[in-house]
Length: 387
Image (spheres, rainbow, N blue to C red):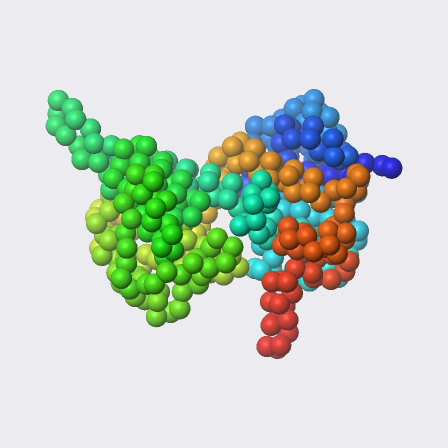
């Protein structure tokens, strides 16, 4: 039986430097009966040249060869979907809840879609496949470094012959994976760090990293499913913002990390709050995207200085700014998922779905010509009902 051929596509998203598989995981994939094809130059942005892949046993090919020969095309973001043919499988971070119509179109074309952002994150055996967490970890670390580079003062307290510089005061909004990494990184740099999250369970995690936890009286615990916070009502958001603003304006650096899968990121820092911050303050909005962000006025991929001297950085692309580390962790997640989906050198997606496998049920969006993931199928049904 011929081995399953997995093709590593070169990323086509603007500024994206990551790669879906790195050379160090190819050995494990070979043991699982997987041959790897790599589009020429796919790993160059993350400092993995074609020669490294060849040494690890991969075959380098051009774009046409990759899409013609691969049974499975893997990527970080969305690859060139127009090149896919019926019977192929595509795997990546494909945001199905934000692209439900696209998922339906791919299903009609006979393409199986597997999206890592559908993984059930609270499932213990899925942790090694959790790409959202691994990339958030990179983002949280990098966010602090980006803030430190733009902040015109020291992070730690500095005692010198010229006098004493007080430490920076950092506020991290959201204490998920990214937020906790940001809190730990800022603390290691010597800042005074505070964290806030609507989930009450986050308090001990923030304190364990040396941060102080801010408790708001206006919002009750809002823990949601899958390790995320639930979406707040408009009334809850307004009360939260009003109370948060009084805390925000006391800090030199604010890092926002709040996201809700498939929806607009919650607005945490209003323009009024930014206007009250001190000149020289820095805000890093990790939720910045085409849907909006956590900070009013933030622009994805851009740094904006307000009239009162506050720098607002729309930083939704932080993993790509640390392409080597981000690619290494993503590659381990991707290879673990592929190995889970493969049996005897071929994809076993149909068997896994039939057996009620929780991982497959979460990540397999389309299969057999239909949208099979429950959340995406329900969204499409709601859209049709509203027409």
